[in-house]
Image 1 (cartoon, one colour):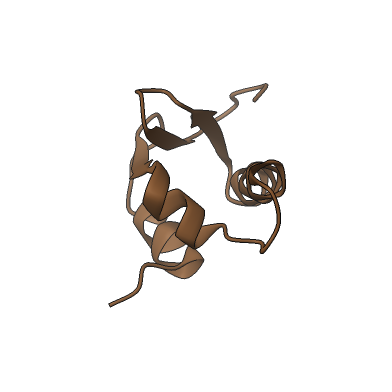
Image 2 (spheres, helix red, strand yellow):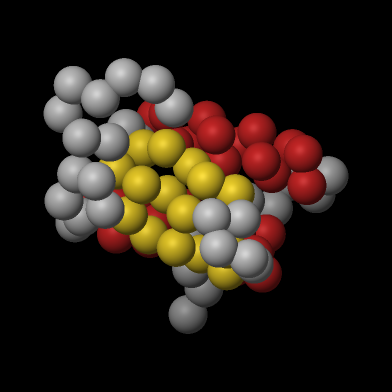
Amino acid sequence: MRYSLDDLRRELSERAPGYGVTLDTGLFRSVFATGGSDDLAREKAVSFAAENSCTVHFEARRGTVYFRKKKPNEVGA
């Protein structure tokens, strides 16, 4: 089974505000693959996070990318 943006979106929808989903960098690259640079994948991830009321934290822990669901009335990235 291949992990997709829809899988990530579903997992995030199941999390309580303030919690999230951690992807290892290999999975992150496969989910956000653009056929271009890592910078384009990062831009795509930032857009995805904004569209899904989340923040994205690159290297929150070494080798990971963390998507955290925003709390109600939370301001900022």
